[in-house]
Image 1 (cartoon, rainbow, N blue to C red):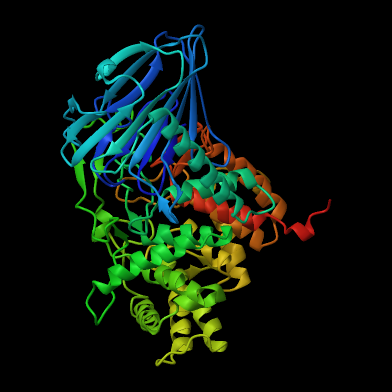
Image 2 (cartoon, one colour; image 1 turned 120 degrees about the vertical axis):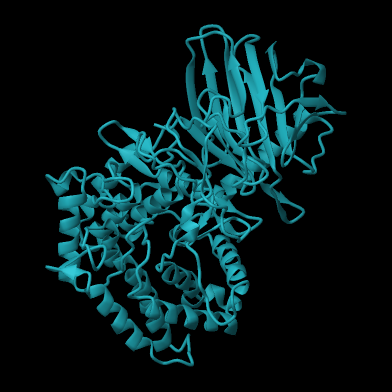
Length: 595
């Protein structure tokens, strides 16, 4: 299992290993080059704090209902606690979220002896940065800016690597470049940052709507999703990591530090269920900014964008990085930016339609949005039979995928609902015809009452489960599709009562046949079970799937049940959004719970 916990403040983020390392941190932005990257290469930069003796006992947890991590390192003679966080709280009626990481080291034994290594790198070149001592901080000059490190220790004690015995807490503050930071009394200032950040996260959780079951898991997932919201841009990142392998030595290593519209859609629906709405407004602004920069006569969207709204750089292999546990290649950029993935129009439609489905957003409605909705509906119609890379981003042999029509029909169902209630009005009144013709396209993927993934090869695809989630096609097709997915794509297909994990598909793709279940598909299956009133089985399945999380409750993209192994990029928004959807689906209302 991945031995990391994530910290952040919606502007900067990092992965903290159970041994106390800052093992992954990209600056100035999450999709920038790494400053600390020993997760992917032992020479990739690290901020290490440990005790001197060997045979360490390690433990790590989040402080409850926060994104603050505590790591405890212990041996027979030395024991310390490391508290890591990024400040986030209201200051002068605005969110304060500087590009800052704070580390507090607390002695839990008498004068523990520490070894501290501070070695950032300039980026993918892995060039070690040397520091110079300034007035009250160490300054590391990097290729994209400067990293300043403040400390409660005397600056004369600090080197790239040093040992020290401590009798009281010590503090480090890592600040990026020209980030304004005023530390007159660093110990008290760090304590103030800690207490205000603790208060902010607990208050945020307090204002979160929760299902009746699996509340702790939902809270952790909600906090994790929030960290992937890049607040300055409005983008929602799929993950903050790159190149963690989906399978060992299988070349399935990808850079996910970008905003996939599809992933963002499932994430904001999670926030909607949780009662948090500012993320919906932020992603809308992000998408609308992209649309405004397009040709006025047409809306042609890519599936993925960088956090600045441009396309990610071309996919490149970083040859001088060894990869996670020597699983190369390490990649930056993503080829998906070159793809056609036609389901994106249904997802953007569904995001926009939230403004019209919910009266709390009434002041945000605009005639310009109606024009965009009409254009997107026409895109859904005209592209319904156009081959694309599909949800799973197949690189070759594109075909017409059923998931495109599923997302289009889900949006059009909402449009019909809004038209019937006069909430929406269009110049073009052919919406019913559009719905019928897209449904006809979807039916072309049905054979023997089972919905397959495409028209041509008719491979079984777990994304077909969404016809049950969104109540599309007939009940019989839904039932037979669910059964077929269980029989052919379930890790354990002997008994539905022992159901656990679902593969996305088992066909040959560009890199072979996938060997590990995809967690989001497992959560989709659970939702589908609840739609068919199999609540007992669904709840037991969800409880079983929780073993795919690591020691602090975080999920990767994939999970190997045979080896109890997390695989793929980590943490993964898709998986945590799926858990939230599934937890709400299996939970009875409070009125239905017997006391």
